[in-house]
Length: 164
Image 1 (cartoon, helix red, strand yellow):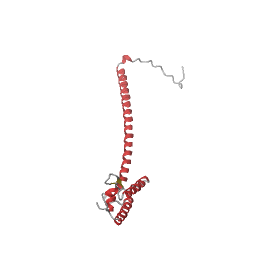
Image 2 (spheres, rainbow, N blue to C red; image 1 turned 90 degrees about the horizontal axis):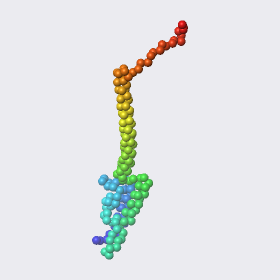
Image 3 (cartoon, rainbow, N blue to C red; image 1 turned 180 degrees about the horizontal axis):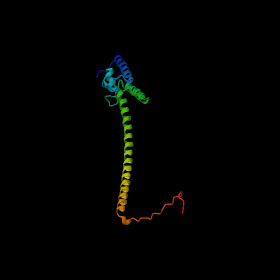
Image 4 (cartoon, rainbow, N blue to C red; image 1 turned 180 degrees about the vertical axis):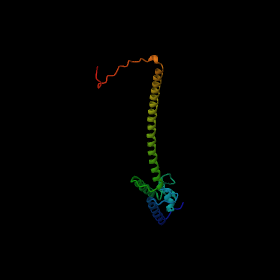
């Protein structure tokens, strides 16, 4: 494979840096991400230049633009650590994950509330059943007068009435 000239390499590095700046500002092409694939496509270079190469003897050497790929990853990580996410999809994913966690918490709280209310309902129904049974027992007792002893009625004394 032919080697590129120093002039071409310099021109490609300038194109990569310009594309890197655009991507890190959030100016993404349609269907693109903030990644090396999109960086290579925007700069008009092959992606393989960002990765290490193997010599014929099996040793590895850095790719011609590997230092730029490392710089891109470093700058991207710094932006993400600062809370600035240049890729709108990454921001959307982060927002959806936060929404998902919030919904999971709300669901757990609702499940706990439902469990408490179910327990309360069971207790209330059992108390109502016991009260109903007691009312039925007392009604049956009223219908059977032999179980009831009538107390003598005493004459009430009116304090305003003169005594004889």
